[in-house]
Image (cartoon, rainbow, N blue to C red):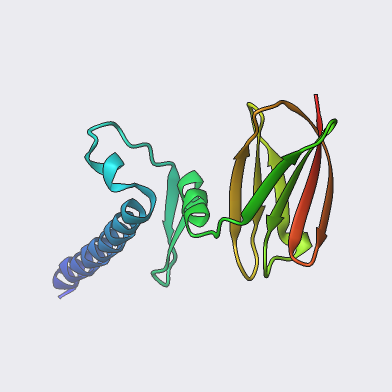
Length: 154
């Protein structure tokens, strides 16, 4: 009798594994649909995906990594932005209705560029490439849903 129960346990375990693999396959399909454009898909060039996937005991799929961050960027609203130059400064204004000042992040990137993000009730994302170099010190203000950045020119 005990010999018959062992194969049943193995079958149930295998069924559970295949069920988890099916969930992972569906999650991968969704990642590909949301993160890779049709052009990238059919270009023949290698596509780099950088993420990790975990399945909880309840069967929920959690995805982490740079592609998950890219998905969040793709789902974000691009704020209406204006860039103006003065003698010593570059002024960037961005309209971000619904954003809270505490949720706004500014990150300096390479080659005269910066990234503005806000996550909260609404997600905003904007990458800005400036023609002229600037110092990484800035003055920031946020009033009436408008972010204003003053960058000092180099």
